[in-house]
Image (cartoon, rainbow, N blue to C red; front, side, top):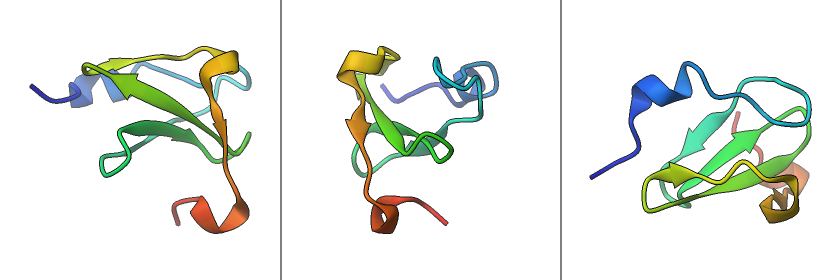
Length: 62
């Protein structure tokens, strides 16, 4: 089973309420504005600030 792409249309960053991009390789939802990556575990996004991974500039998707 994979992350439901319809879900991406309605989920938002819990901090800035901005769009999240799915990084399939790392199984993360990425917020470019806050430079954070939220894990996706068992196809369920974990949108908790304390579980987010800070991203370096070079890790941000184009």
